[in-house]
Length: 472
Image (cartoon, rainbow, N blue to C red; front, side, top):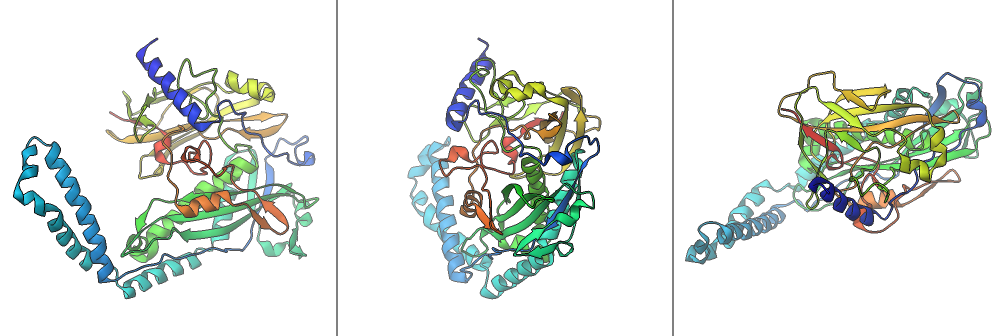
């Protein structure tokens, strides 16, 4: 067997065993009312209803004084000193480790870093100012309306649905449950309630602590004729960690941009789950690991993934030979998927969507290229990309079964695992009850670290789990 195949086989075995989900069946969409699917060739109209109810808007807490800054700086200095000693021990002049001056390295670094930390400490007044800026920015964002607009845009982008935001005050309220029957006369088949129960930061103490933004969006899909809840789900997002002062800079511009990105990611995710059935991505099957490492989703073929067996990344950069690279992937539905879900053999109107992002910290950066509704399993990028630049890419399939629009999740790698903040783990794992019905938790059982990947628990895709290439 070729060396690349051996590496791929071993990697697949490891990942398959770790994920404990090999060969799981492809996602299924919740059943929509038959009346809105019969005999219609037009996009299905969905009323997107923003529902007020922000229950968690916790602010960061501080121990922001000079003493805390000194202590934190001293700890950083100790770590730097120990690291320097390690460098001396393993470097070409390893005997320097036994020089008398080396004994003073750690305490000297502690003092110097402590002094710097004392000057950089956030004072109580500064902490209060930062908290006020963040609170004012969050209050001005009108989170439910903003998230509803993103959900409506994501619906319309599918081509199978048309999303339109309708204010809640247009809907008659009865016993705390909305009555949406009036929407049927306006041409809407279903309503999608959007609520933001959490828009907060991870908790951390210190002078200018590193904080991650946590956002959760709840969605309930409702039959407007009967009021029946068809499906429900909440989706959660964690941003990169930033210093609290960074979140507050320039009147909270970074915070505003990150919240907007969270709405975009989670809006897409609710549409995938509730209307296209992309609950999670099928994981590798035992039928394919002998030939290649299988991604979660459609297997990319070009650029050929440069798999990493051990380390912090799932794939390394693959250098392409053109700034107009060719992207290729396997045909949908893969044979092994049909063996677990026979209805996929009846899939019609199969198309593919491709996205290319510029690489960024923790998450995919700006979306620089997108094509929707491709008929072939390959596509050459039509816009010239930047030279010597790393890009991330993914693909998904969209299709119909018995007239019902469906989709796969975007293709990702199962490794590396993500390390969530405690607040994200709580948000993902806890189901909610609203207006008498349960808003289901993400499909994430409490368990080991191996579940924290976009193949399992995550509603967003860390950049490390996307496929990557570098332009010449």
